[in-house]
Image: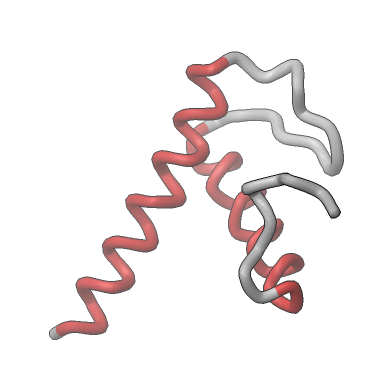
Length: 65
């Protein structure tokens, strides 16, 4: 069994999460490719993740209204 912590809780959502990640990367100007992206700087990876969190929070807040 793998000890990876970055797996989706709902495996069927993986495709959607990957799409969301690629969309977020485009929005912040990071050249993300399918598969391995170990050549990204910490700043680039953080900007993609930060943008994803920002969009998720905005979506949640809209749902509360």
